Length: 136
Picture: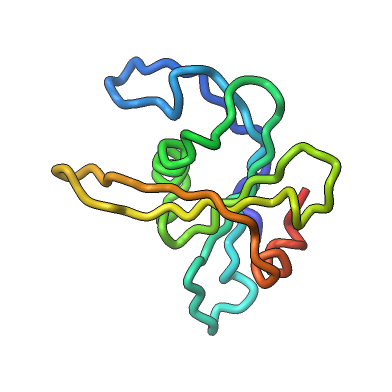
C-alpha cells in the first residue's frame, strides 16, 4: 500500500531552531510504501520502503540522507531503521544498476537525539524484486 506519492521539497532554511535536511533547497519525487500491508502475517525486517528520485532541482541527498530520513520518519510515523531507503539514479543504465540503497542506523544517542550513520550500497536482487512494483 502506498502511503505517500508525490514531490517532497525543502527550502534549506530553519525557523524553528531544528536542523534542516540540508542548508540548500532541493526536491525529490518520493514514494513511501508499506511493504507489510499485503502480507500482514509475515514479519518484515524492513516494514516500509522510501523510494526516491532526484527531481533535478536543488541539492542531492547522497550526503544528507540521514537528515532526510529523520524528517520523513517523523512526519510519516515510520521507523528509520525499519525502512528500506532507495534512490533511483539518473543515468541510462538498467534499473538494477541505478538503484542504490542507504543503510541508515543509529550509532548512539545524545540526550534524546539519535546520531545516525548512513552508507550507500548497490541494491540486492531480492530487494529489487520486492521494490519492482513500486519503482517509478
